[in-house]
Length: 324
Image (tube, rainbow, N blue to C red; front, side, top):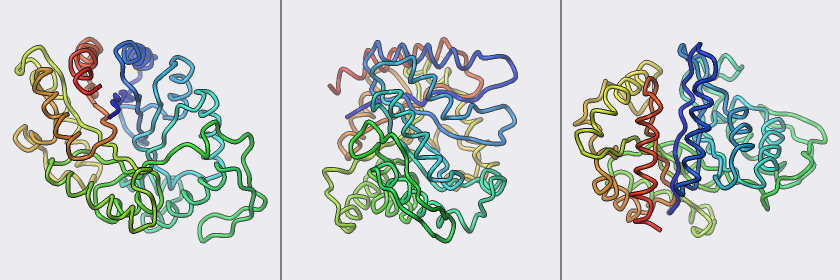
């Protein structure tokens, strides 16, 4: 099992504090044994959100061991040639330390403002992932699809990873899970209740076999919100109200996973909040139901650096050793 941190990209108009904070967190992550640093993608967010490729490039130049991942990239807004070129460049910059979580996107503004209609996003996703994989594997070809066309397309140099960097397909609906099984190398999801997640993972591996793939080559990644404190009360106090406020923004953005402002009772089974021992117990549950990669989101918009560093450190020093 591998562990990562989802780095905060929510910015504001005040210089570059968040960049430096992320670099400090990444250095701590390498010191205490994390495996993955993950970032996301967001557009047209009032408070600001840093673009992922530039962010990952800066992280790649400042890290030595962390795998750098997107969780999630909004795939339909990218031309696959440009995407494959960017992925290849980052794969070389990091000497093969990249993974790419991708999804359809769900906010209309993040699609239509890039020329992608809501009804076109599935078709563009399917064409883009197919074309990008072929380009990253070194193919040179013409393409005439419903959404993408080009002549004599190729990407050089080829990526460091052989045959190419891996793609994780994102989503919680059955159709998204099946799409991840058929089109991608892994499945990534925001965490749900353990019972539902167990069912989703079972459905994913059934779909992998249905697609004629080897389940041993597949993997499951989840992102879990939470905080590790010295005491249970300290952990909850540190996280509230930041996490619930962000979830309220998801509702405004039309995220299908949220339909009303959650309470602690609503999310209790979906988060990891408490002492190291309490959080380790939750991690054990995820490990036992088949999670391969767990990405921990512990800093939310508005939360200062010091509590985030403490949570990252406690998880790394007091929880990770239980799963080595």
